[in-house]
Amino acid sequence: MTYLHIRMKPYTQVEGEAQGDETALSNLLKDLSQGPEFARVAKLENSEIELKEGEKSFVVTRG
Image 1 (tube, helix red, strand yellow):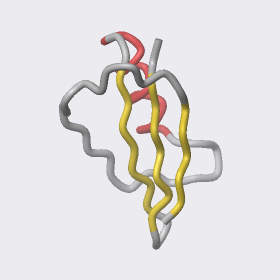
Image 2: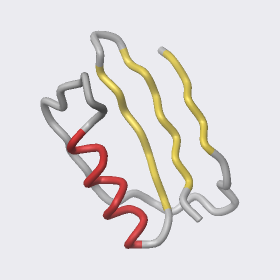
Image 3: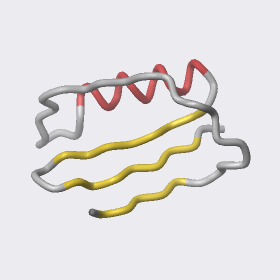
């Protein structure tokens, strides 16, 4: 299972956190680097963060 939390930031920036198995996260990063059909991904950064136990949902926040 993969957990994903996306934050819509000002000036067309998007920030997110994801956790899951290594294969799922690798596939997610690949998809994010390509972006949707009419979008342009200027930069993609990733780093490891502390695991959040019990997180089991997809959340989108704005601001």
